[in-house]
Image (cartoon, rainbow, N blue to C red; front, side, top):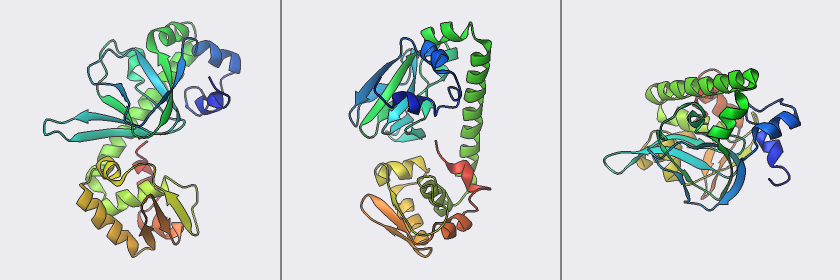
Length: 234
């Protein structure tokens, strides 16, 4: 692994706070790899032989629909993990994953990881808690996709891309608008309408970024911190 990779891995909740010696033992057999945009990581139905930590870039996990469209399950960035089902399920991957930007991933073989945590019950418990929380988050996300207006979903998405909570901000968009629309459960034209609504709140759209006149106004609009915080889509 490169210098700095370990610091990113520590951002994953199930690894946070572990002693370096314990963490390195758990990750024996794990390998880091740089991927170009568009690279297929795994496909639905393939044997679930590993889970992954995003060390840099962006990855989408999705299911292909009969009509040729994609149902986005999640977009994962630096410090996120995905496909943890591989640790416990002796089945194939339930979805597919591609790099949506140049990315760097840590691939953790599930069999080796299972063997390691078998002797460390506290790590097994931590891993189960992590997976359970992600499942709960997915349920919350589906609920909010069904109940929140498109402009509110978009506002929450933008707020999750910045740490600012007041004042003006320039927010880079991590991937193209078509993928953002799909992630938010919208058609591209619906995203355009949502952006038009947010313009009245001081949001202006550029090619690869948006400018916000006052982040706090956007947060108030979607009740960020009470409702829209469930719409992190991560």
